[in-house]
Amino acid sequence: MIKKEMIAMLLAGGQGSRLGILTANVAKPAVGFGAKYRIIDFPLSNCINSGVDTVGVLTQYQPLQLNTHIGIGIPWDLDRNIGGVSILPPYEKSKNAEWYTGTANAIYQNLKYMEYYNPEYVLILSGDHIYKMDYEAMLEFHKANDSDISIATIRVPMEEASRFGVIIADEEKRITEFEEKPEHPRSNLASMGIYIFNWKVLKEALVTLSEQKNCDFGKHIIPYCHENGKRIYAYEYRGYWKDVGTLISYWEANMELIDLIPVFNLYEEFWKIYTRSDVIRPQYVSENALINRCIIGEGTEVHGQVYNSVVGAGVTIEEGALVCDSILMKGCTVGKNAKIYKAILAEDCIIGAGCEVGIGDEVPNETHPHIYNNGLVVIGEKAVVPDGISIGKNTVIGGITTAEDYADGRLPGGKSLIKAGDEH
Figure: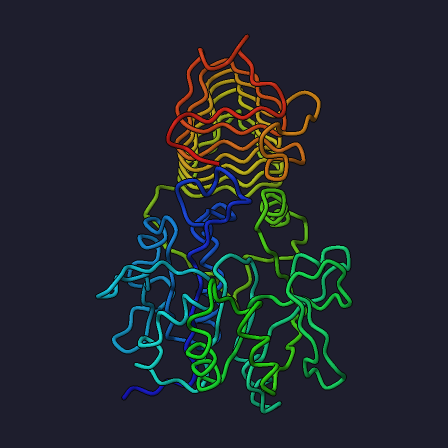
C-alpha cells in the first residue's frame, strides 16, 4: 500500500450562485481572475508550494472548463505517477447515481481514493478563495498540539462574522465552541473552510454520519467530533484571504491587484501562482492608446484608453474606446468609441461600437438585487451587445442580444436582459 503523510481534497464543485451570470456555464473555481489565472489556481499552487503532491479535486457543477484547465496537472508539477492531481466527479454506483449533497458527503464518496494513499493526515480545501498559505506550517501546528483536527481561522470584522462558521477558542487555541453562521456571533474568529484531519478521525466521522442528509463539515462533522471529545485547534492565519463569493468582492479582489502597493502580490518569486497558459502572441499597444494602472493579459490589443482595469488575454479594445474600473476576461472585444465604466465582462463577450456601459443613476436590480448591486454592470460569457446601446448600472446581460431587445436603444439601470439558455 502507498503511504503519503498528507493528501489534499479540494472541493471544487460549487455553483457560486452569488456570482450570478458569471457562473451560469462554469463552476465558480474556474472563473477567471487577475487577467491570467482561474480561482482554483490559488489552492493548487498553495499545495505544490507547501510540498503537498497528492490532490483530489472534487468537481460537480459545470465541470468542463475546470477539467480542461487542470488536465493532468502539468502547470502545478502535479503530473505524477504516484500522487499528482486526480479529478473526482460524482460517480454512478451499481445501485444508483448519487450527486454530492454536501461538503462532507463529497469527501465520503471518495473514501476509496483516500484509502489508496493511506495518509496520516487529510487536508480539506475549498476551491473558491484567493490567498497564499503554507499548509506545511499549519501541519506543524497540528502536530505540535497533538491535534485531531486543526481549523484554519482568520479574524473578520464583527459585522461580517455571521456569514462564517465562528470559533471560540481558549488561550491554548483549543476550540471550545463552534457555531455555523450564527445570527448573533460571539467571536470574530472565522473558519476559512480549511481543515487538517487525522485520517482515522476523519474516516470514523464520515462513516458514522454517512446517512446524514446534506452532510457538511461545519454543520455536522466538526460538531460531531467536538461532542466526542476530539482535540480541535484553531490555526490563526494572518495573511491575505478573500472569499470572492459575491460580484462586489470578486471585483474588489481584482482591483486590489493594481494598487500601487498591492495587498496581494502576484509577482513574488518565492511563492508563485501557477496556471495553465495558452501560447499567445505578445500584447500590442498602438501609438494612440493610453493605459494607466492596469494589468494587461498576453495577446491583448489596446487601441483606446484603459484606466484602473484588469484586462485578460486576447482582448481587443478598439480605437476611441474607453475602459474604466472594469474587469475584462479572456477574448472580449470592445468596439470603437464604446465607453465602459465599472463593469465585469465575462469571457468572449462583444460590446458593439459606440455603446455606453455603466452610466446614469444607481437603481436597485429588479430581479436579483442581492446579486447585482454596488453599481456594477455584468455581461455574461459569449454575450453580444449591438452597436450604440446605453446600459445603466446594476444591470446584467446574457446571450446574443439584438437592437430589438432594447427599447429606445437602452437598458435602464436595475434591469436584466438574459436571452434563453443563460440562467441567473
